[in-house]
Every structure is written in C-alpha cells, then in structure tokens.
Amino acid sequence: MDRRTLLALAVGAPLMPAAGSVTPAAPSRRDQAFSFVFMGDCHIRPELDAARACAMCFEQVSASDCDFVIQGGDHIEDALETGRGRATMLMDLYQRTERAHLRKKVYHVLGNHDCLGVFPKSGIDPTAADYGKQFYIERFGPRYYAFDHKGVHFVVLDTVGLTTDRSYEGRVDAEQLAWLRADLAAQPKDRRIIAVAHIPILSALQCYEPASWLDTPHNWTYAVNGREILRLFQGHDVLAVLQAHSHSYERIELNGISFITTGAVAGADWRGSFLGTPEGYTEISVSGRTVQSRYRTYGFTSVDPHDVPI
Image (cartoon, rainbow, N blue to C red; front, side, top):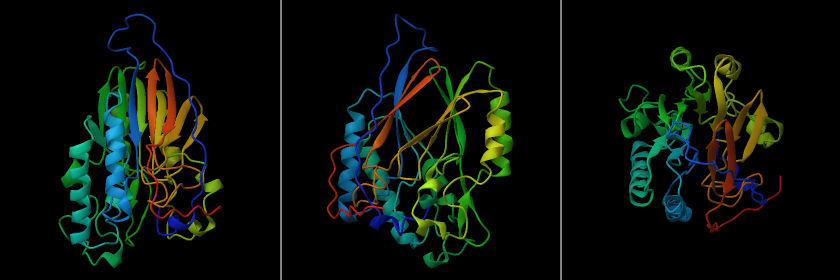
C-alpha cells in the first residue's frame, strides 16, 4: 500500500481490549498455552525520531513474557522508490536496532517496502542482483516458510506480487500456492495452523480506506487471489491469519478463522495515529483452539503529529 498519502490522514482512538485465559493444570508441551507478539510496519528511518521509537517498542516487547516475535513486514521506509544507498542504510539501521533491543526469537515477513528498486523512480535496473525481493532475502532468508511452536504450525506467506509494469499488488503466486497446498496436506488433521502475511488476505479496509488510495495502478489493499488461499485452508484446522500493511487494527471472524490485522509500530508513518490506530503492536495468546488478540501501545509521542479526521 502506498504510504505517501498516509501522513495527512491520522486520527486518535482508544485501545482494543481483550480477555486473558488460564490453562488449568500441567498441560503437555504440545498443548501448552503460549503468547507471542505480532508487529508490523516499523518503517524505520533516521528522521522523525523513528529509530528511538522502534527501540522503545522493542524494549517493551523484550521485557514481556512472550515466547517469540513475528515481524510482519515493511521493516524500513522504504526500498521501493529510493536508491540503493538509502535503502541499504535503512536496512542496516533496522537490523542494528533489532539486534540491540529485541531480545526474542524473531520471525520475519516480506513487506512491499522491503523490496528494492521496484518503482522506476529508484533508478535501479530490474536486472540488478539485489533487485526486488532479493534485497529482503539476502537479509532475512526465504520469502515464505513454515515453523512449529508448541503444537501449532505457522505458515509465513509472501503476499507481495511484483508486476511487470514495476509496481505491485496483493497476491500469493502460483509457486507458493503449490507449496502451501503440499505443506497443509502434510499436517495431521488435528494440527492447529496459523497463517501470516503482510498484505492482508481478508480485510474490511476497502470499506473505509481514504479515497485517494483507490487511485493506484493495482490493488495494494488485499490479496487479489484471496479466494484461492481460503479454499486451500478448507479441511484444515486454521485458527487465525495474521496480517499487517494496513496500519489499522482489525479483527474479522469468518468460518471459524480469525483474521487479525495489526496496527503499525510507525502509526501514521511517525506522525500520530492512523485511522484510529496509534503506534503499537499486537499480543497474540493461543490456548487450545482459542486465539485472543490485544493491541498495545508503547508510549511514543510523535514529534509532528497530524491528527486530521477522515
């Protein structure tokens, strides 16, 4: 999603509450309840006090009892239309800040702003070895993969579809769909599954997003082939899909699946709250087949807030 118009569209709102749950008596490790942090859209940069804010957020998460962290993409602001020098500096800044302040196991997700030189304005040739997603892969590893934690199978997807006209759309490509089909088929029928993506697979944002965001060359709001992904989930015990990109905290329940979209660590790109969601991250708790979410702020005040109502 384009962030260039995001700065002038910020509003404030209260946090979303959530209840906790307690597992009674000595469960097995496989069935043990656990919690983790899902954060997205750090958009780190040296300006607007963003690096200090990311450090504040990471320190708060490090002091929590969460088992691990999933960083849901858009680590930097940005690599799409900046030159290699700026993009490299930003990625170095992100990784240095994470190493210094985020003392948890971190799983990373590819975001659109993590792709190098996609927009022609960047001046980067598409034949460059580090063009596009390779820039991310060289820093963080595969663009899609799976891992397991306490009996839950996590599938991390790449929902950034680069287009031939040097832009992007929300999409899971055919290669991934084949991989996802095989990965899900290999799981026992009772295996609990949580999927993770940057650009949402399902979101209500298109119902209330700013009108200026509709004037884009492709669908930047959600995965255009979301129906294909949802069909693959059928017949499997998919509990939740975690999503970022929108900078707005949402939770949608559909056919027993919770679609949880986290707000941004950066809020409205470091100028206050965005569409009612302040700077923050989401705590996720899993107990049995119950997935609970709670959005949390971390005490940062923007140096130049734009609290303009929609």
